[in-house]
Length: 168
Image (cartoon, rainbow, N blue to C red):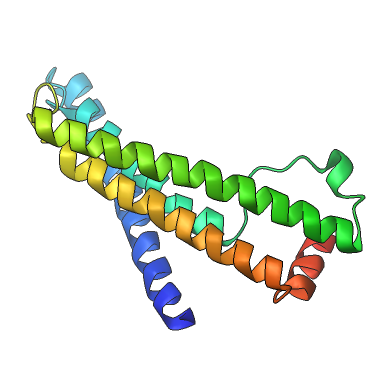
């Protein structure tokens, strides 16, 4: 299972890197075209929107697996032992529900976009494949977080997380 996750992680990191690199290249070409040739890149804004969405949704499973969600340590840093464990379980449960909602809504949206044959304004890029990939990545994030929740409930990674929590 660890081997499968390592492959998925490397694939997602590659997608994120390629999307970011493409956004940089797109911006350079667009700015250069706009200022030097008075001809901005046609559809550059649309492609940037798609790449940004892909970057965010590709990073979601990685952030979920690393439990790198936003946290406010005002009170939670003072939790110890069993209170810290149950706090983590509650946060993971809320995360599973939120990510499940995101996965579900993106799945619904992908169906709507596909049935309406929606596409981008100027380049006419179909939007349903992008929405479908985002839905899959939302569900993957939910599944990863659900796995963390099950491990937390079973007490399998209590010591590792306690050590991580003491470093924060």
